[in-house]
Image (cartoon, rainbow, N blue to C red; front, side, top):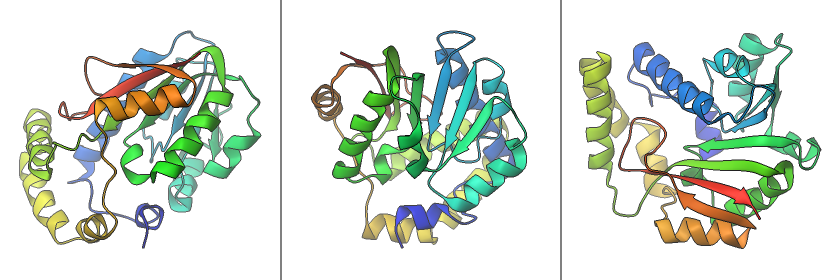
Length: 229
C-alpha cells in the first residue's frame, strides 16, 4: 500500500466528526485569508474532502479542488459538483489547466507524502500554472526535529480548545494500531529543513520565504510562500 491507496478509504486520522469539521474549517479560513482578490483563480492541491470549499469559492473567482484519491473526488463531486465556481480535478488533470492561469496555489499537508522526485515535478508544474504575480503556499511541512510526540501534543491542544479532547485521546490510541502507523513505518514521511524547502523552491524558479506561522493547528510545522521569478 502507498499513501494514495491509504487515503482512498475511510481512515482513522480524524478523532471524530467534530475534529474533522474544525480541521477543514480552520484550513478554509486560512486559505480565504490568502486569496489576493475576489476574482482570483485558486487551486487547493491535495484538498481532501474540503468540507468548507463553498466558503472559499465565495471569496474568489474560481476554485479548483485537486485530490489524488478517487474516493475523495467522488465525495467532492457529491458535495460540490453542481457549483459553477468549483472544479474538481485529479492530479493528472492539472496539466490541462492553461499556463499562467492561477493566482494562488495551496498545497497543505501534502509534501510529507511525496517523494523528492514527485515534489520537484509538482514544483515545475505549479510554476507553469501560476501567473507571474501568483503565489504558491506549501503548508504543514514537517521538520526533521518534529517528533510524533510533538504532533500528538499539538493535536491534544487543538482538541482541548475545540472541545473534543476525549475523542482525540482515543483517536491517538486508535491510530497507534492502525494502517497509518504501519505505512508510516514502511514508507515514512518526507521531512525537510527550512533550507531544504528554500533550495527546492529556488531551484524550481521561485523566490522563497518562510511564513511566520503554519497553516493548521500544528505550530511546530512550517509554511512557505513561493513567487515565480
